[in-house]
Image 1 (cartoon, chains in turn purple, green):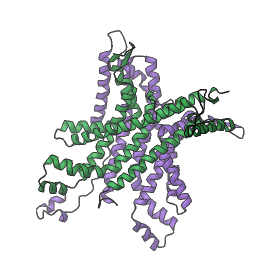
Image 2 (cartoon, each protein chain N blue to C red):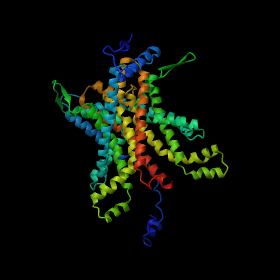
Image 3 (cartoon, rainbow over the protein chains, first blue to last red):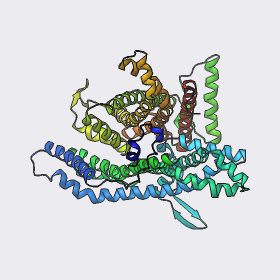
Image 4 (cartoon, each protein chain N blue to C red):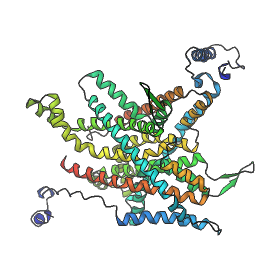
Length: 283
Length: 268
């Protein structure tokens, strides 16, 4: 808006004031998008409906509504797994990332190796690894601690998260201009003080968008747990479809799963993009 | 106790390399008897064949999906610059949909849901079989998934080509199409190569999902082997190492390629 003031007096872009960063509005996934999603779902249900024979069967939509509580329960389980795996992965990854910028070469090399290993291994293979090789219970001092499937799946998912968070931390620290380190040095900050009081606070801002992106990827990866038999949304959908045994339900039910995940992940993606754009201007 | 531990019956006296290979097989067979670490995929010819088939399936799947996803990416990037708002909206919706839903659910959706409404054909044994088998669906689904990322990557690459470069080409008498082919695309390709490589690595890792619809790739074959020989820890460790190795080679080669393709004056 301020550009307008100068527009008459100059046409040189360099003389114009820089555009102020637009304030980040909360993502809007209201109305319009909800309608689109609902329309998609209705369309798929309607398509399936049209294929159904004329027999006195429950309508496809009614079946979907009947099963929805169970499926949504599974979806909540997915979200819970994603929260837990993200928390575990972030904690471990932050430590690993700080080790990657350690001054001791063996520590640095070791953490680099661990990071690369878990970053390059497929999520599904890591999940299989944890599912099959961890025991189903621990006995500590005569007390049996059960170790159910979903805990193992959470651990399996938190491994790649850990490696990715480690890379995010390292990348953020490396991306800061070296002048920050030198200025802190000249002000007689110790290395630990520099890291905690100068470097890391600046890194948080840089780490937030990729971290949110990683969370969305993790949420989408939680369905992998269905392959190894955890009762999350995909497993429940399979069970519901097996119980109904009606081929015309396939499309609406799978669409429902897709729509649920989209409704959860799309706002995160939009918010990530907003934050990225906002921080880009200042950087 | 285990039938597979017995030496293969049809083994004949071999000389040179054959004997050396046989010695390795015998060594691993003895290694199993001594330590209990059962690496059937080395000494058992059937398991070895299965695993090698699986490995090539993974490589084949990655290459085919890579090619298809690059085509989708280029076409999508072109469509995003189109005049028709409908086309642009369509591409944007495609990208958002495939980026924000789980690839596994996409795979299930394609294979089970869409696959169920497609017509079937009669094969030579008189059985009904679907028009597209599981491998075809895996290729389609994974290509669309990776393609959604490629569209964005190519678009950002094309946008990164400076306007003045295009104007310079125009001043030299290039037509619009010539500018696009000789100036914009080569520059854009170099700009987006790092992100493209990232996506390729992701694609290789995502091919493991095809396991869920029984595509015989490496994870599936390893699963078959550990179901037969009950050597889960060995196969698991092998899988992890194999995938990390595969991706490691890929990353290394791509980094070298990136360095040779690097534009002077861009980046570091």
